[in-house]
Length: 172
Image (cartoon, rainbow, N blue to C red; front, side):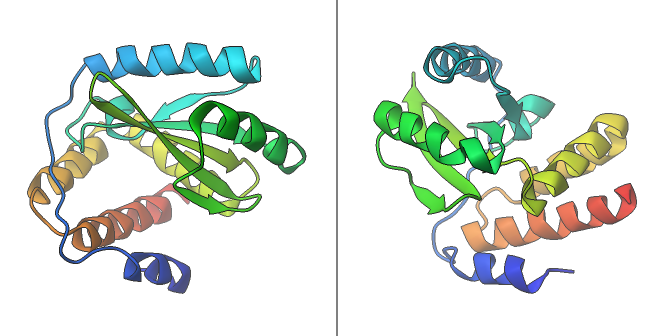
């Protein structure tokens, strides 16, 4: 099942651009460590999490998903610092989520500043915890990704959203 909010987001995705799924690349973790070090220099000691396929060591789009969860009172402070370091964000949902992109050695890293009290963040934490405790779900997730190679962006994220919702339901 897909919520109305999720469907609204899915509706803006491309039905013509396609997804390329590649095997896990250990070099992604090296790139994550470099960016994390730079971000610690910029932001100070704060939580910086590697998430997604690279964190799970499974096939995916070959990019890093890096998250910086902060409370709402620090959100705009961190945002200003990140804009000075990374330039304008690719997407911005005020006091909720901001996405930046950085490349090192042709490895794409999506850097998300996220409100740690937002429902979307809390749901993603539940999803991640469930996967860490259930390796069979990680295998199923990777199979979903591999079977989506060549699918449209919208089709891929629709499948992912359905899977994530299923896991969240199991986690509760």
